[in-house]
Length: 129
Image (cartoon, rainbow, N blue to C red; front, side, top):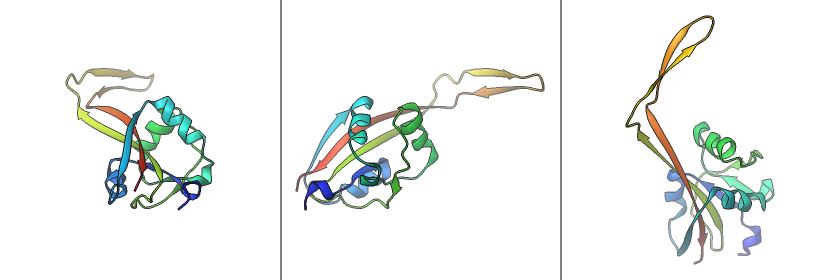
C-alpha cells in the first residue's frame, strides 16, 4: 500500500491500543511544535481524528495551538503498513495542593478548588510491517 494514500491518524490513549494491534512499529516522542508541524503538512481530508471528547480537543487545538480544521472522525482501527499516527497521551492526576481561589463579581461570590492536574505528551508512530 502506498503511504501517500493513507491518512494520518490522531489518537488518544484508548485509540492507541486499538491502532497497535499487529505489526512492527517505530515510536518517537515529539514536542508540541513537531506535532503541530507534522499535522500541518497534511490536508484536512488526509487526517482522521480517532477520538472523541471535548477535553482532549481543547488541549490539542486551543492550548497546543494546533489549527482545528474539523478533521473527520473515524473509529479507532489497526494501522496499515506504512501508516503514520500521532498519539496524544493525556494523564490526569489528583492535585496535591488543592488551592482555593475566590471568584467575585458584582452579583455573587464563590470559591473554586483545584482538583486535578492534566499532563499531555505526544508520540509519532509509524507502522513498518
